[in-house]
Image (tube, rainbow, N blue to C red):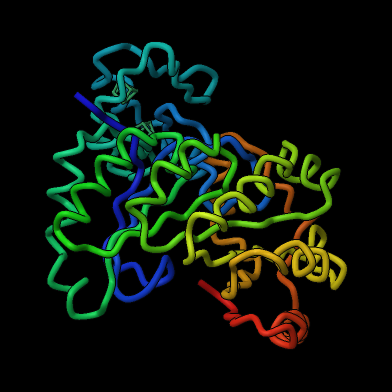
Length: 300
Ligand code: SF4
Ligand code: SF4
């Protein structure tokens, strides 16, 4: 049976394509963007978000855990993820609400059933279903079958992708996709490696190839002060996409909404290196792109 690890199925989404949508968030990503507001999306395996600050160390979770995976020693609670089977009992019994299991294996039928519940909203708003992540195309077999079924139901489909996958995955899903939301994060390859953890070469090559076989690609550009909020980055991106079959761009200003999740995952959040670009700067970038004929929106 085909399954995928999914960490959220978000209803009434309005930032991931046209109309009212359901966005399915797949767990796992080949990139590690420093500003990622869904850090729980990066690992493909299940995780536990744990807020130690609000934990009273009452010990209930230790008692209910069937795998003896949790222990409290010297007033510190730890969870052995090698023992944990992600049954979720500790989350259910924690009255402080400081534990959350992230990730669940879904079958194709479960996801289809869930997203079809809102088809009336898709029809009334010209909305549909978006797959996001993480990187949804690391589950290409699953996503391809999902989209085949959605197209049989005449539902609009969108893929929110980092582009950091084998081109074969993009080629396979393109047949069933109405809209691609394709991220360009950094044109400078050295900075890409520094802030994202890998080269941008595959991403850019894939965009060139994809634009030859698909005619509805929106570029999404996260703009982060301290990383890429420069005219140079905007111009380099513009020069790159100039010859491609791409006319729409979303500029996505950095925000720190996901910051609180980092400590819950015991990850560092390099806040001092990032900030939100000014509204004036965003408008300036928008004007530069519009002067070249692009349709530009600030936000999703
Ligand atoms: S049940 Fe919740 S509050 Fe109690 S020790 Fe476990 S995580 Fe902390
Ligand atoms: S999810 Fe289940 S197995 Fe894992 S720590 Fe919680 S209670 Fe134990």
